[in-house]
Image 1 (tube, helix red, strand yellow):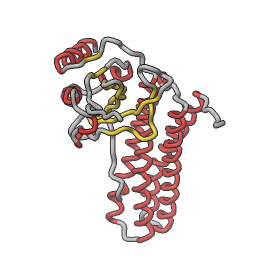
Image 2 (cartoon, chains in turn red, yellow):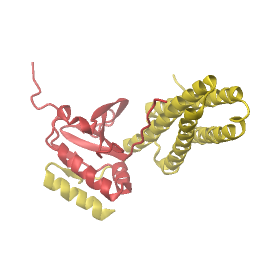
Image 3 (tube, helix red, strand yellow):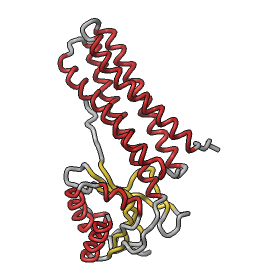
Image 4 (cartoon, rainbow over the protein chains, first blue to last red):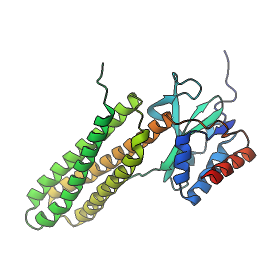
Length: 113
Length: 170
């Protein structure tokens, strides 16, 4: 039996997806600053032990093509990149690296009448 | 085998659905203006019809999101056009929601109050399903995003440099 002592530890960040770069440049400057701090804080963190305020979770019913092998599907993760929860980003986690995919405004509405 | 959605069909259907949502959102204002002082029962019925339409729209957006995702549709060429439209109808739906949230506090008729409650819930469902659709399009764009190979960092310093490179390039 093998035990994964490291868990899902983030050893690298990749921002090279053009979809992410296009969305990033549309973010307001202050949001970019806050998001940059959040993304930096993820380095060397275990995804399983991320602070709750980041709302880090794999998306249900959403698997994306692997960066390394497009025929394989991997989980897409979502994270809130601002403290007011109004902006989020998504990424895949492969081989210790977060591959950022997209980012932008996330609107929510209270369901109760 | 499930039918494959033709690309143009999805866009046409989405545009049509956006028009439907807009008509519904406009209808609510008209209903309220003309019927509120005349007949609560009729207004309750019309409000329920609007709720049903919004629920139907919400189911459509959820369904098409899943269908596009399942087919890994390439949405790159339409997202620039579609996402602003979706943002706009989200605002229209929110206006309806805000109006009803205010109206319901003044409503005394029980059947109308119940209908307004249902409309408030259906606006939330529709809003969320449009938001979900928007993010599906963004995620599908990412599935087809080209890769810039050198934008990789494995320590905080190189990550800061990476952000600077992105900043300088934009």
